[in-house]
Length: 85
Image 1 (tube, rainbow, N blue to C red):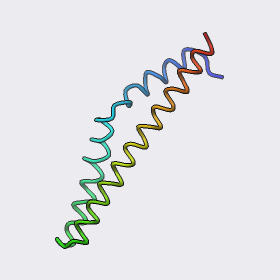
Image 2: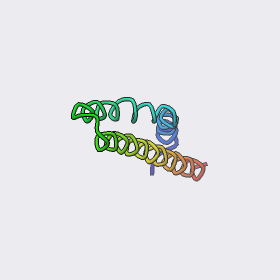
Image 3: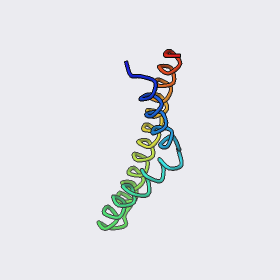
Image 4: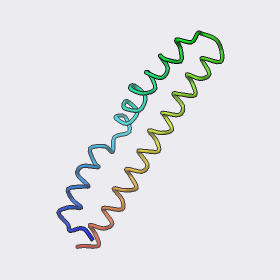
């Protein structure tokens, strides 16, 4: 088991990433916009627009998934920290 100092350090690090807005910016502004720009270079048809929408939906889902994993890890570490006290 980890000691109390290591758990507190990891909790502090994870708390920085426990911001849903930041996760959305990271997962939508960077990869989704790049992929959308690449896909849109193929044309402007309905299929292309659907692919761009699917890309944004995928990265939105990914941001929510990463956010939930971070929250689960924080809860797990807090449980470990409370068990040590």
